[in-house]
Length: 448
Picture 1: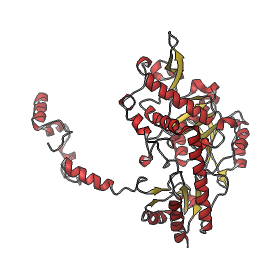
Picture 2 (picture 1 turned 90 degrees about the vertical axis):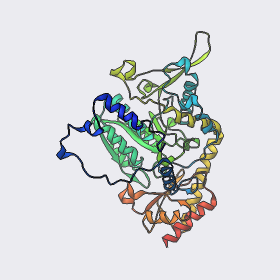
Picture 3 (picture 1 turned 60 degrees about the vertical axis):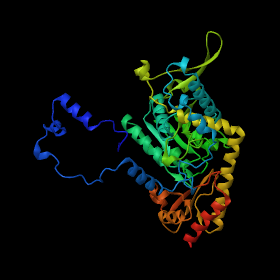
Picture 4 (picture 1 turned 30 degrees about the vertical axis):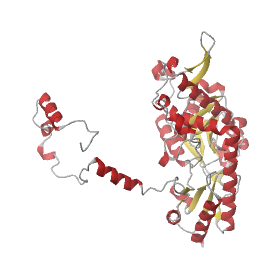
């Protein structure tokens, strides 16, 4: 058979047409006037057999430049990190791989416990009281946090720093439009949030202030200074974080954050051309009944044996439509499981060690870039990303890097018009000294 996944044979089609009383497929469209029917041939390739098609697709796939074969310095929200081998072994088990929302706790204890462990580890990393079972990604988690703040404070203004990921800000604006919420962006200064501009933007009508830690440029925002500004009008303080960085940075919970969100992609989830991801959502205890999605709680059965259940439900399926939060459902928990397995395999010391390597290797790359005559734009504390300015278009530099089997950094000019010819370079624990030196040499040669 040419197409083994197409179950209908010629006879099957004939039988179906006879059953509905028509002679041919064209008879199904008899209601459409002849004058508006398309009579020509579509300008597409002729169908191929399965074998021919597979060969063509494999040739196309072989053209991709990916992190398994190339050294990647591309970050901007998706990073090339070490993934413990055990992650794929666990998430490939059918009990997890095919699981759905665990509505029946008596047959879903394994899934529920895995989610509970994820929640616990996120709370430990962020310094918050409660975490949900995961979100779709960091961008939607950020927007959900803003909507929670607006609903909780009954205010209609969200203040967000320009140093927050540009795609997350776009998602926020989309959510806000439907809720008639005003989104105000605060400019940056020297790679971090302009505190004077932030102070002026926050008023009594502000529902929340949102910053990123580390921010989109890799710089460390001064949360201790931002917190009193965020809370001055009784607004809420929302922090978007890279969870790996929290292996070494002070958690936002220590700076009185009300909501901490982010993306668990650095833990056990490959870049995979931009997804899938795993958002997380952590709050203080006073907000636990307003958290979107699911929460898993620990309890005891009638025999005193530990068990796990879905708890504090506030969703439309549970007949509380007037108080329902967003329905984060399906098996998003599979990605949360991958993150949980990675965090467990690495342990507290392993996460701290990887975070430290990210800082050290990025610092080495930054210093080497300066020695090569490249202009490093920001000089404050950073995590694993920094910005350099080149004398050529970033696309041209990246084309040259690909010939050296290197995936270059992100072209900031795509989202920040004032940063034309600026490259955001990500240096993770997987990058070697030789790869870093080659990157800087190639960028330096093009800079001359």
